[in-house]
Amino acid sequence: MENVTFRDFESNDFEALMEVWSLTDLGNTLRGDNLEIIEQSIRMGGKMLMAANSEGKVIGTSWMTFDGRRIHLHHFGVHPEYQRKGIGLRLAKESLKFVKQKGYQVKLEVHKKNHAAIELYKKLGFTFLGDYDVYIIRDLGVIES
Image (cartoon, rainbow, N blue to C red; front, side, top):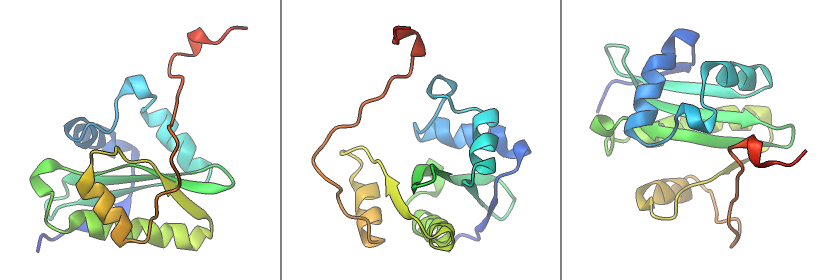
């Protein structure tokens, strides 16, 4: 089993985090994924959990944001070279420790074709919330004044 440690995000992790997100199609600057937003979400009661290999390389991320009502688990992923080795399950369990400590419900979104992630989430106790679609406005310029 891979020797992995779990720790809180530090600002100097940002470049390595973006590499994992790029390789797993989880984030980019067009989505508002930047250091300032990450640090702001942590100050607001969230957490960014990092998984690192024995050399200290970031190989997984779990971003938990808090809106005062629920914890939203997103940008959860493991570097492709380290997938299917149990690291995702361990990272998820570490993430859920934070959720339990906070004492709020946890919610996540997952692409319906990501069957491996769906099975992992079900194994952890997540259930399908309902049959509805998620919509977003990324370009605030489309909003009329």
